[in-house]
Image (tube, rainbow, N blue to C red; front, side):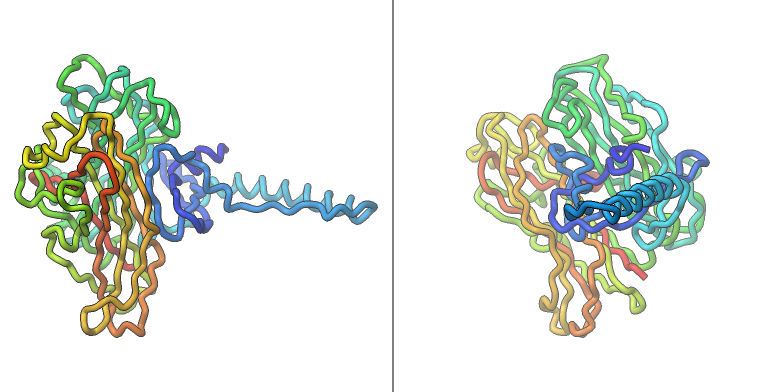
Length: 419
């Protein structure tokens, strides 16, 4: 068993990691446990981070320097303990002991590499579920891909659910970033680009639905190339039970060209924005269930750089754009706020403010946030929450905050009850 494989999805850059036991997954018909290091607040995909850095939360005892029989016995005891722990780690590989969301989650892992070609959407993984009307499931996918070329091409990780006739039901969620080529060395694993996406699917009527993860790539200048989804490191998760009372957020429409009147920009006359709060999104007030013991809040923020000559941003901000390669620097923070009886802030749970550099070559940047174990404070007098993401332009090229394109959401959030 390789710890690298067990911890490959823990790409947190936050402080205060908490060990949260084993998280299970199913690969085909085989169920295995997955040791998971989960942070108490921010889970943010940072491609420069080492996947197993959360191992630093473990500690080891050392000899006190004593000599003689007691030291020998101590060493003997430690050897026995080490052997026991090794055996336990093997036994845990067949256990199903951990929960995610409200209840367990099934993971389907890509068992062999799967290539997808330019402008052809490829379903890489899927799971079929039978749901009652109004039942909700959290869907999460990690697509890690390599490229057959050194040139820059687009890469999308898309989550959507379809009915038995193959028609898409509800919202589609996409996370996008340019793959900068097979020779890219600043990714955690050179040439390997991972992208995460989340979706809350709610069945409009009782029936069977297939939720899948799809890979897509395109280039305006290349033909004949392909991206390859990496086995083991590419997976799809679907919660096994209904996420009762969960809610989905998404910001307003913003076209791929950035010309929609509801697009939000920072660094082009306005330096800050609050996503889901002052960007035209209706301020949704979510009520935690009366018997929920805590809450969980997730968010995905998609940002696009606006450099000179890009077709992704409106012409009205041309004066603020700088040459490609200038890049952009932003500060971001995710907040989940419990309100008091007057609808003002009572208690705020948030990530730390994090500074991110967005490369013009990457063009798009996906920030994934998670606040787990959010307390529901009875002294607030309500169980009502709002969600928002703070974005501040620090330097470089302007930034477009991506929104809904047709029925596809690029920036979104989820609140869930934990019972």
